[in-house]
Image (cartoon, rainbow, N blue to C red; front, side):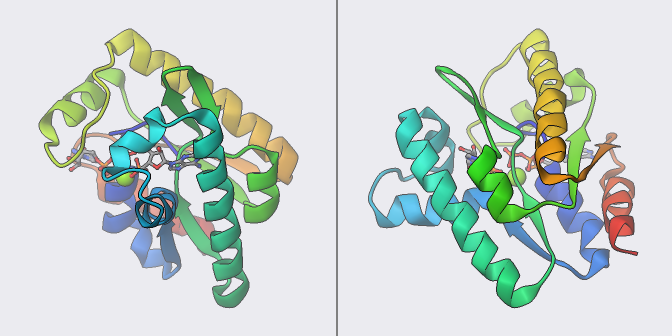
Length: 180
Ligand code: ATP
Ligand code: AMP
Ligand code: MG
């Protein structure tokens, strides 16, 4: 988990793969269903959908990932502790999602706000929000609160991993080490 542009997907691709555990992108699962239903044509539009629509897609994705874990065992889920919507922060793992995913460890990928600001601006492949440094700080702060709540519900651990510039692989190694 971590805020948009912090580098979750990069970290998982460049280091965490060493754990030899399948990585599932929660947003991909939601987006495949949203596309199928003709709701959106861009993954970055999902967080602007009405809250109840996001919740339904979220719940469906969690159930699909639960089934996958039943067949394949442990998974690493690339997702968000909270989604910044026009109406406020939507919990990424509300109770029904936590119960479906049963996370052993809630990993928060973090980085200093200036680097996140620059990563968002440099990455032309996505349409990320043009948040101020203060807004980025607030989002990272509230994500720690959400992570603590999820860990309590799941009886799991919280691990905070810093994704420093040029050191995505090192961050991934820390996630891979959870499986050793
Ligand atoms: P989203 O939640 O929107 O999917 P994300 O957290 O998965 O975002 P990435 O897409 O992995 O973020 O990374 C965002 C950008 O930051 C990419 O252009 C990526 O190459 C860059 N980046 C990620 N980690 C690092 C790093 N350690 N050093 C430098 N650049 C990085
Ligand atoms: P990502 O590529 O990780 O940014 O995921 C794309 C989009 O999927 C996000 O911007 C959210 O709209 C949505 N998403 C991902 N994880 C969750 C989650 N746990 N709950 C609700 N929406 C999510
Ligand atoms: Mg990503």
